[in-house]
Amino acid sequence: MLVNSRGLYTKSLLKTPAKAQRRKENRKIQSNESLRLSLRLCAFAGEIIFLLLCLFVLNGSTNANTRVTISLLSPGHVAVRADLDSPSNSWSFRNAYAGVLGIAERADDFRAITRSGQDARAKKIATGEFRSDLEATRITYNVRLSEIDAASVSHVSWLTSDYGVLMLADLLPQDFTDPSIDFTLPAGWQVKTSDTRPDEKAVFLVARSLRKTSTTVDQTPLDLVVSGAWQFKDSEALKAAGKVLKKYVELTGYRLPGRSTVLIAPLPVQVGTTKWRAETRGSTVLLLIDPGASFKNWAGQLGVIFTHELLHLWVPNSLRLEGDYDWFFEGFTLYTALRTALMLKIIDFKEFLNTLARVYDSYLANPDDLSLIDASERRWTTAGSFVYDKGMLAAFLYDLLLRTQSAGKITLADKYRELFAGHATDHGNANEAIIALLGSSPAAKDFTKSYIENSTRLELERLLPLYGLTLDSSGSSSQLRVSRTLSSDQKRLLRSLGLRD
Image (tube, rainbow, N blue to C red):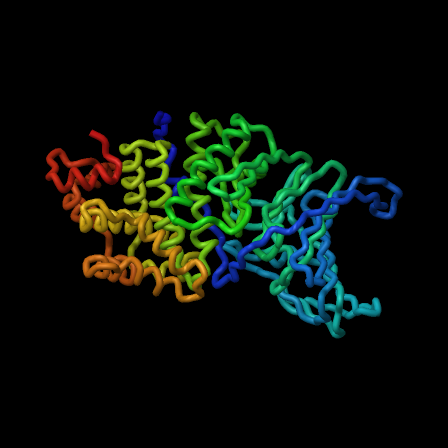
């Protein structure tokens, strides 16, 4: 039965913080390795205060010698110790990520120690850059995680007095490969992740109390880890995620290589009208929700969020393509997520059209003076919604073109299957590979040339009547509707898109 979905896809929802996908990252296929937990007692801060410590160990590989211990000392403060696999005298921390600047400034009290235990005389030479006079085999430093805001909360590590999110990408120096990670936690705390072989994409949820449920979808293990009390049951959230995961296995024809995890926790800051923030990194989906949110339809809202976030487990996280192709893995993903919500009956066809109209209004509010490829390269220095808006609308028009040319037999979904059939292990240029894939006919080539490679402006009022749709932008908000009179071909097209008589 179709749920009451009006307003689930809002303009602000479609402009959530962009997924912080690393450029040219090494997307290694993760293998399952054993987790081992041990309990220890320790003396803390010089006093004989016995705390129950949870030591969470993830071995990067059987030959890895770099061992990292991350200790939670106080709210907003962690200490890191790294015993290096080989001597070094130079370390660099990431300072920018997904438009968030100054990340490396949070690291301080950096020290380096030689193999003999001598002070290697480390110095800070620039923000996030440390050098030592002597070769060191151990480094220690602190990271301040107390500064949290709406723009960065889903993209970087943070820690409150009750829970937090820790990301190796901003906690460890760059170029740490396959480290073994230990977490020293206060009594009663837990840590969960999907990354049994951690690298820079690993995300950890730490909290006083965590609940975990699991399922398997088409041979794909899926975990749900929840912190906090919510108006939905954990089983309902897991079921919603499982339905979407199943649909994307069908869509791509590709099974994810390892275990995937959805982490749900309360937002620690106020974020305005959009009551949630999300990030999909590696095999982990992090969803932070305002605990005061009053969604009328929690199941539908979670389903909408999952249609977008879970697709990122495939695109770009399971592709090894290189380069800046945000127009595809964000814009086309938004459209594909909208189509998925329609097919799963989370939304109806009217909301499908209304969403596209709202996105068109957002698109019209910004100049269109860059190609989608150029806009992807400058994503963090241009209008934040442009890649999303034009990419999504371009995907919509491209899907209509394919359906029209093939009498409804070929859709954008088929291109995802082709993509994974040929490029799941390819290290080629993403823009070249995807544009070649999309340009399967002369008309499709002209389309990609105009709207992806060049900065041709989208004029939906002129383009959509060909497909039996009308768009009126004369009022305060655009209205996208089915034409009153349809040809037989247009009826067939719109029925394939989801229109019901």
